[in-house]
Amino acid sequence: MDRGARRAFTLLETVVVVVLLATIMLLGTTTIAGLLRVERAASAASRRLAERAALAAQFRADVAASAAAPESGEGETAGPACLVLRRPDGSHVVYRWDGGRLRRRETGGPETGAALLEAEGAAFTRTTGDPPRLTLRLTESPGRHVPARTTEITATLGGDLR
Image (tube, rainbow, N blue to C red; front, side, top):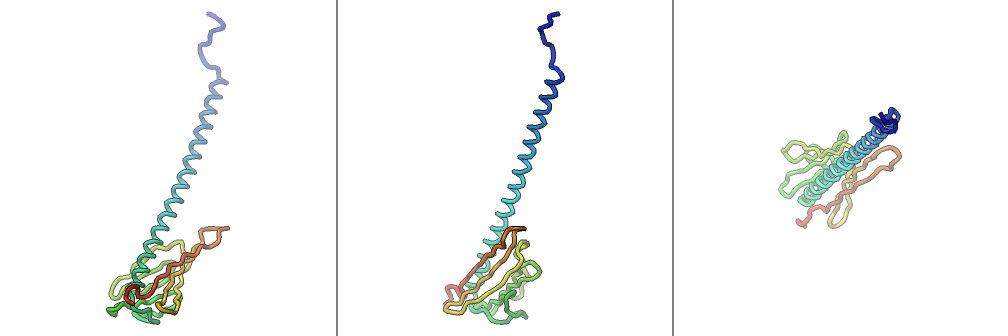
């Protein structure tokens, strides 16, 4: 047999190949895990934006379709955590911030909740003038070391009724 001919890999060569493959697999797994975290965060942000857009559309439609924002109605008293809207037909829509959720109720109808689980607070404000404007201010704190974010949704009372 010729001494110069090789018929197999040495143990050292095999160990080097196995270590390189393990390193490549570790880098690939870490990359995939990071991509999944980014995708979850992007999905949550997209869902939160869609919820805010739906809430803004509903709030603006309710305020525009209302004739007044009385101090009380439907057994509720208006304030920073509650907004009462009276429609031209005499029915009411009530928005109430309670227990981390913004709830909306129509006269004789069930309460519906817009899921604002990340929001820490909501407040309603009114401006006097012609026409009056109502603002819903949502406050959320996305995490530690990040300042709180405020979202304001403003609508004109009465919309095209005036």
